[in-house]
Amino acid sequence: MKIEDLLSRFNDFILREQLLQKSVPVLLAVSGGADSVVMSKLFSQSGFKFGMAHCNFKLRGKDSDDDKKFVEELAAKLKAPFYSSEFDTKKHASEKGISIEMAARELRYQWLEETRKANGFHKIATAHHRDDSIETVLLNLTKGTGISGLHGILPKRAQIIRPMLAFSKDEILAFAEKEKIVYRQDHTNLESVYQRNFLRNEVIPKLKELNPNFAETFSGNIEKFRDTEAVYKRGLGLLKKKLLEKRGDEFYISIKKLLLFEGSKTILFEILKDYGFGEKQVAGIYERLNEDSAQQYLSENFRIIKDRDFLIIANKDEEQSGFVLIENIKKVVKFPGGEIKFHLLPGSKFNADSGNDVAFVDYSKLKFPLVLRRWKAGDYFYPLGMKKKKKLSDFFTDIKLSILEKERAWVLLSEEKIVWVVGCRIDERFKVTEKLKQTIKLTLRLRLSA
Image 1 (cartoon, rainbow, N blue to C red):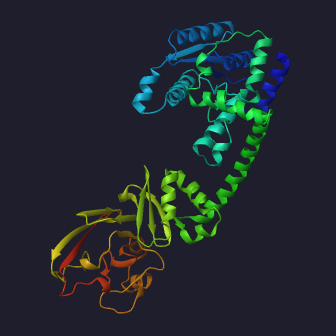
Image 2 (image 1 turned 120 degrees about the vertical axis):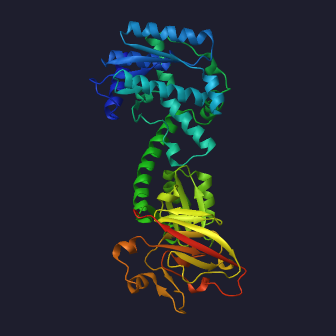
Image 3 (image 1 turned 135 degrees about the horizontal axis):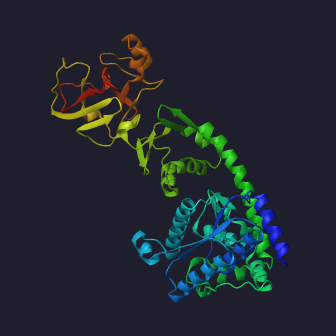
C-alpha cells in the first residue's frame, strides 16, 4: 500500500465529511500507538498545521513514561508543538465510581479541550478507525441502545474530528509496516480484561468465522443505520411539533394523541429524554398513562405531572411553574401568584366573613395529591350556593375580572374537581357543613408582581 494511496483517501475523507480546512490548526491526540502515529504522518504529509498532545494515564508504569518520551520525540521530528499531561486515573475512577476506561476517557477529553482552547487550535483529531466504530456499535447493542447507539463513532462531533475512520486497523498496520513507521506497542491491548479488548480479541474473530467479510459488511450496516437515524430524527421532529403544546411556561402532551401513534412508548422516550428523563423512568410513566390519579416524576431540572388527559412538562422549581402537585398537607405552598397557607381546624369551625382570600373546605372530601394550576379553557365548577355547574370563563365574566386578572387566575383541584377558584370562590361540593370532623382553612397571600 503506497503512501500516496492512503494520503488520497485520507484527504478525500476529510473533504467529503467537511472535517477540516488546511489553513486551520488542529490538535492531534497521540498515544504513540500505530493508529495515532500513522495519523500524525498523514497530517504532516498532507501539509496541515498541527500540534501533538499526549495523555499519560499512569497505568502501565515505565511503559507509560516511555510512551510520552516517544511522542515528544516524534513531535520534534515532525516540527510540531508538543503538549502533555499526567493523570491519576485509578484515583479518578474510584472517586467517581466509574470504570478505568471511562475515567481515562473523561480525563482525556477534558484536558484535550482545555489544551485546544488555550493554544488556539480549532479542532481536536483522534485516531479512531473503522474497527473502533464497529466495536462501539457491538458494545451498545450488548448493553442496550436506541437508534442513536447504532451510528457508531461519528466523523465529527463538536470540536472533535476522526479522519482515521476512513481506514481499517489492518490497513493502518499494513501501511505502518510497508513505510517502516515505528510506533509503541501497548501490550494491555492483547489482554481481554477491558470490554473493548474482549470484543476485539474474543468476539469479533468468532464473527469473522461466520463471515470473513464481517468488517466490510458491518461498516456498510453502520452507514445504513446512520441514514435510518437521519430519517428517524426528521420524522420525530414532526411528531414533537404535533404532540408538544406550549402553554405558558409548560409543555403539554395529550395522552390520547400520543397513544394514537405506533411506537408511542419510544416516541415518549425521545421527547422526555431531552428533559433529563431516563429509559426506566419513561417506561414507568408510560405504564401509568391510563391511571386516574395525578402523579409526579422528577429529573434533575424538570417535573412531569400526569393530570387527567395530559402529561405536563414543568420546571422543577415549583415557584416558577404553572403547575404544583401537593402530595400532602403543607404549611405553605408557593406558586408564581403568591402562596397558600394550610391550617387544619377541629369540627366545622369557619368564619363566613373572612373574605375571598380565605377559604374553608371539608377536609374529608379532599383526595391527595391535590393540584394547584392556572385555569384553562373548559374548566368548570359548582360555585358555592349553586347546584348547576358553571364554566370558569363565564364565572370570571360575571364577577367582572379584567383580562389581566383572568390571566393570573389559579384553581385548586382534588381528583380533577375544582375545590377553590383561588381568591374568588370555593366549590359547592367542598363546602363546610355542621357534621364535619375537620375543616381545612386555606389562606391566600398574593404577590403584587405576579
